[in-house]
Length: 65
Image (cartoon, rainbow, N blue to C red):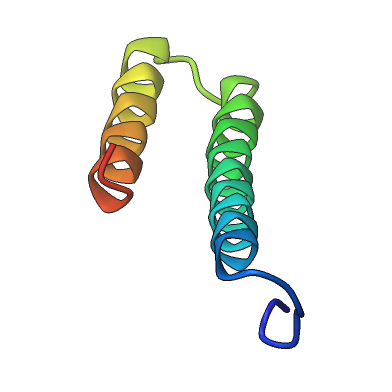
């Protein structure tokens, strides 16, 4: 998307950073929506919470947070 943008180098870098943040945000939204959908099907909420925290820890590790 940003390969053909004209302008200063710092602007291109900021734009790339913002695109990266949006992708991370999108991944988090997907995780949270999937877990929300599971709430209606799970009786064992402790297991669901453990799975949710595991996925969030995985996300943090992948993105260096």
